[in-house]
Figure (cartoon, rainbow, N blue to C red):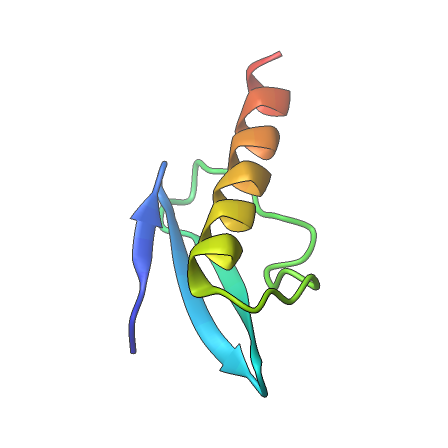
Length: 66
C-alpha cells in the first residue's frame, strides 16, 4: 500500500473507479483527529487528491494553533 506522511498525518491515496480519493490518519496521539478520515471529493489525478489532503491538514492544524 502506498502512503505519504505530511505534518504528522498519514495520507493513503486509493483509486475509486476512474478517480482518486485519500484517507487521512494521525500518526501520533497529540494530533487532532479529522472529523472524516476519508476525503469525499474525488479527483481524476492522484496529485490533486494529495494536494486536497494537504490543504485539509493545514486547515485543521492552523485552527488548532489559533
